[in-house]
Length: 275
Image 1 (cartoon, rainbow, N blue to C red):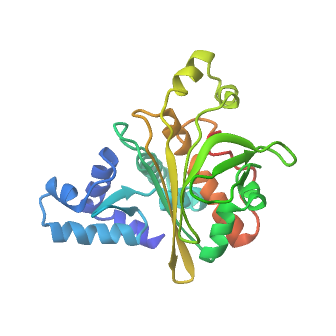
Image 2 (cartoon, rainbow, N blue to C red):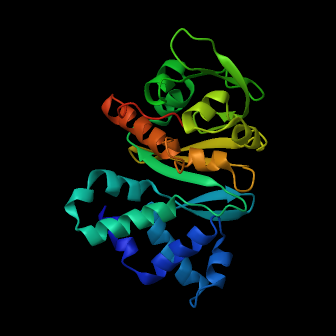
Image 3 (cartoon, helix red, strand yellow):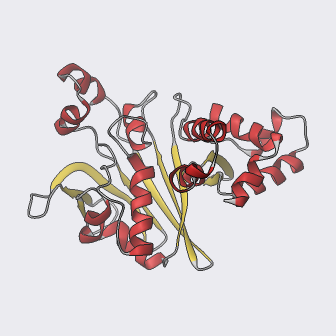
């Protein structure tokens, strides 16, 4: 936690976070353009933010894009919030909200966390049905995890595995996994209290995709989850990022996954990613 507070103590680094909050997924060149400092200085500030896990980077071809990462702020809010006075609590809550909000023109959700496990065990946690059921709100995922294969959902033990149209896009165990995401289902309308017309409008969103990148990091494993290809102003983006009431989204689910791998028990009754 000390690294997070040190990173936030500098006004220039807070300005970089503000810039990413306004438009997430920027290159070093783009971030440097709006600041009165050299690109080298901006790079050093970004390195400090990255070391504190407040910023994560994703390669897109030859470019390196920078994204806000809410994980450390979430950890502070969840574990240490009672140690700070009211004004600091308000500041942390505002920052957490900012870090979890993405511009709606081309929304992308990126989340990085470090798990005390092995890459192989983390891969198993992402791909084995009895593993996913323990931290995914009772949902079991099943696939042979070959490119083009379906990803099937089972809502409860003994229930039917459903094909929601999700397909494996990339699978390189234990390093990389990507698959297309499902659309909203009738049960989501009931959960969120949507009318038939509201559900119909949301069914018009294009199908998004989620990618898991697993990288050894000393005795830890770095897990970066990128969920993108949303429609503009996507309700699904708000659901998976935890911005819809009643949806813990990826932040809650990944916290439960991390807790399960490190302690043997998931968080109590996590909400499914979209409800």
